[in-house]
Length: 231
Image (cartoon, rainbow, N blue to C red; front, side, top):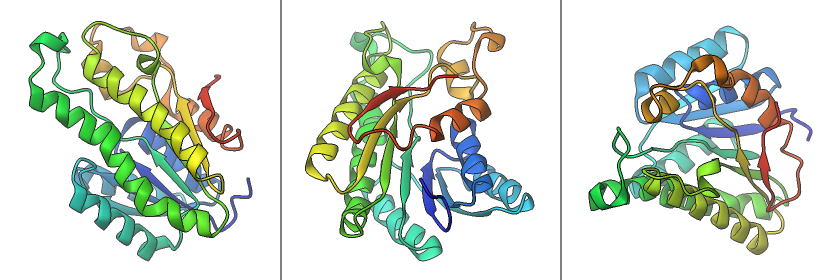
C-alpha cells in the first residue's frame, strides 16, 4: 500500500494499541486522526506524534453514541480530507472483574454491544460509501481470540467481537470496492488486559508498539480476511 498523503482514523487512540497505531502510521507518513472518550490523554498522544514530525489530530467522542459517530465522520474528513484507512480499535470489556452472563446487568451487556459493534457499524456506514466511490480504502476491525473461543465471564466481549468479525465479512461482500479486515492482535501488555486478567505476567505479553507494526503489515490482505498478528 502506498502511504504517501494518506489519511487514517484510529479509534481508542489514547492508550494501548491505539496509541501505538497513531505513532506507527504517522511514522509512515500518514495523517492520523485519533478518537477517544477522554480528551486529555488523547491530546498527549497527538502532541507526542507532532513532536516527532507527524501529522495528528484529536477528536473526543463516545463510540457508543449515534450523535458522536456523525460528528467523528464529519470532523475527521474536515481535518485530513477523505479517509483511506479506518481502524476500529476502541472497545470495552464491560464491568470488571468480569462476571458470568447470569450476573451481568442488561445495561452493561448493551453498552458493550453499542461500543464494540454498533459504534463501528455506524462509523463504517458514514465513511465507507466515500471509499467505495473513490474505489479504494480499508476498514480494519481489531478482533480477539474471544471472538472464536468461548471463555467463561467474557460473554459480552466475546459476543461483541464475534459479531464484529461477521459484520466485517458482510461489509466485504457488499462493498467489494473497499477492503475490510478483521485482525486479532493477540494478548498485549495494556490497561484493558490488566483489568481483565490482573494476575497475568506482563513479561509474557506482547508490546503494543510491536503489535502495531505487525498489524500494519497485514493491510494488503484479501478483503473479508480474519487474520492473527504474527510477531
